[in-house]
Image 1: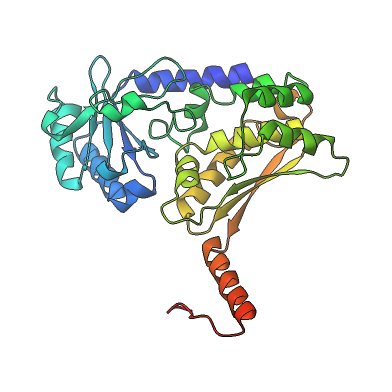
Image 2 (image 1 turned 90 degrees about the vertical axis):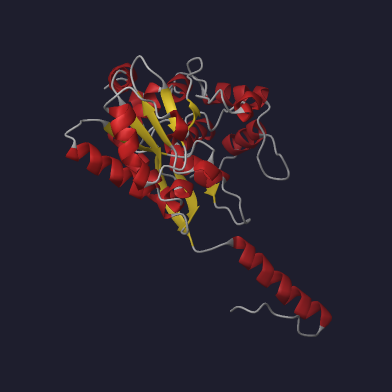
Length: 325
């Protein structure tokens, strides 16, 4: 299929979803830690018992981890209500109150979910924090099903790849240079310059490596994106590969993030099925594949070990070892 045919099908599926009552439940790691899977099961059981057909979507993290499990009930021509800390015990109240009747159960609500302009992130107007945020990378997180590529495509996903494949690689690099995009590490190295250097280097083969490992305690930026919107990472890697002349990519994820690994693998399979990965991507003649590499553990431990060994060697005396192997 052409991209327009793929996009048309995705749009139809998304429109049908929005025109029917559905439930979105945050099931990223934060939600699961708070009991979101039990909440999902409670909804499915209650709906089945009442013989009510309502789509239950397991989404990612919308950024309100303190309020998990988060549940969004969306009804056509009515409010999209966001409920917080929804335990299985509260599920019958929501099903009886808002799913099958017209009581929005506001005593359980955190706020309402409003949709911005196309391409903008949904927001909760009752929470002041959303007035101070401009969500770009995270704009689809917690709103789409990360295991359904059509949700991503219907919300402007892979449109950038379609545009990039109609450009020359040098044109893409110039656009990235003009954007001012920089690496997120301490050096802040200009991304466009990095891509230009890589493309001009004569050696082959070339690879695109996505470092999705996080070793600092509480640093969960990569995990949130991979669990909530993995196709975005894949699309970016494909564009980078086309721009620099690479035919293969690797995503390095720590093994302690099993949900991220699972959802990225599902996303890779779906992208390949639709022709966004593999040979002759979207009829462009460009070939690109992506593989997952699971890390063995936190690099912080490795740094601490190196520091201890260095101190032992420099001082000529044992450095106090931590009370763990």
